Image 1 (cartoon, helix red, strand yellow):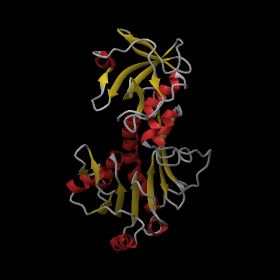
Image 2 (cartoon, rainbow, N blue to C red):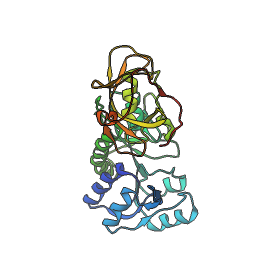
Image 3 (cartoon, rainbow, N blue to C red):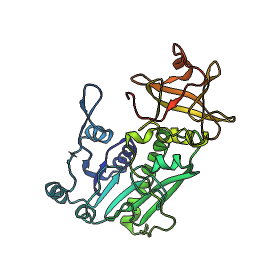
Image 4 (cartoon, rainbow, N blue to C red):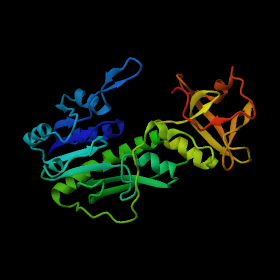
Length: 313
């Protein structure tokens, strides 16, 4: 089958590899433009582009996917299907209706739950017990198209957005090939979405600010859901720190106030219960165990985490 593949982040790599392994003819790979990254502001290619380069495939990186010139290029490629996995731009109707078999999206939720850009993060933050992958035929709405195939996976208390994304990427790779085969043969029929609709809006850097008035359990889910990006952060002693890993504890202490800082670790009060911080990332430094962080820092009981965004990243 002649396919054009749209994808950008690590989540989209395994489905792309599955497509190649199955012998489909990938006539082009479309990714987001290279972005400046790091202190040197060097241009960095996305994971899908790097894999496409290894495979020797044609790579397209339009600034705007709606540009008529880009749509003309796609039309000339004459794909039978377009596959989309976390591409990063909304496709216009001119692309959605271009291929004979349609545009197939690999979405990281059990639609119609968590339509939108950040379904993995919000499923963890909201304490869902399960999520999954839905392959769907795209229409011009936001993840509103008919369902092709679904597969579930449980969300554990230890799951971060990073670990869950990897697991869902594997499931997406496993579902993609039977989706294409079944769609082509007619054995897989598009079915309208049914059930309660929810949304997963795009996350911004500032969304990682910790609200210490929430319960310890809620904050643990928040920290996991924000890991690795954008990262759950607060300000302590005028330093912006990211909290990477924590566990909830019983007991009471004022929200955002340090209850213990020493051999017992770093424990802070929350709206309900206390939070034991296990891993932390100070501004400009690597992730470290909290015991290493406490060395050389004069933290003591009664100091407070700020809910303000001041401080360096």
